[in-house]
Length: 148
Image (cartoon, rainbow, N blue to C red; front, side, top):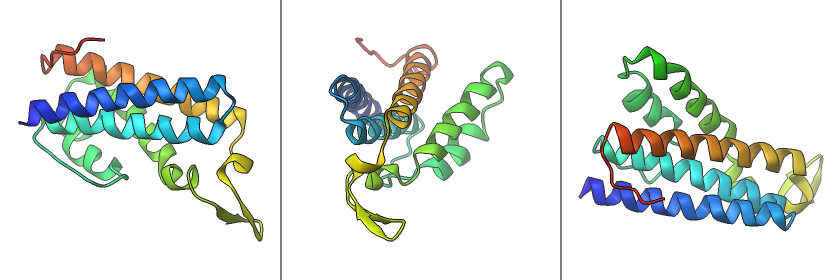
């Protein structure tokens, strides 16, 4: 059952990455950030599922650190695992800020007024990196049958 969930999370992460790329083409920067965050969250959850860990939380950096980062002993992958954690931390809170109006500088702003092309580009770059690295890990280490 966990493998099935892992594959389902991976597929939805792939779909979110595609939506983020489409949104970038449309210059819809808040949607780029939102779908990039969703991609990262879901592909990390796919990895957690392979370790038989399920989480409904959006902020999964602590769970990732506890169950993925700390137990890993492979030094050649250590930097990648920390880079993934860095992306999880970077995306913290962006899932709500990219969807709902909020107060900034004493005035109410919408996500589309707040997110820039630069931030959207960085979000998409992080999502592509995390998705690629975890996809590779799921294929090689866990033998998850993924069809790209």
